[in-house]
Image 1 (tube, rainbow, N blue to C red):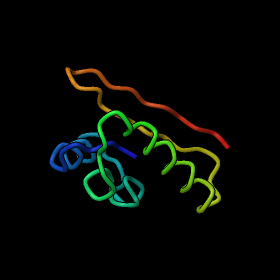
Image 2: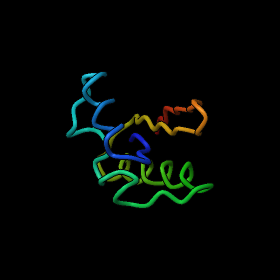
Image 3: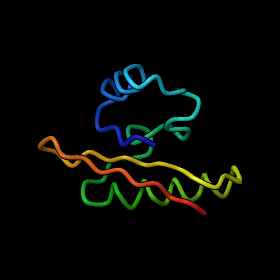
Image 4: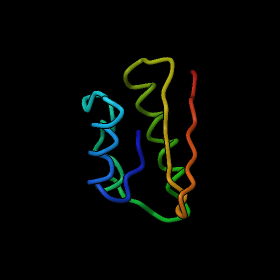
Length: 78
């Protein structure tokens, strides 16, 4: 999942990295689910864990911008 404070930036990332849109932000992303500042990281992790279990997957990736040009990403394995 890509944390999207703005949907336009996510569209650009999908295109630039040639990611499959069917596999990214499968629940609609932050614009649809909410972008609570200070809790977005937790929301992203919980959504990822739920989807890994629901889809019976072993690994997932989540990313989050931190503002000011920084970012963080995390790979989770079940």
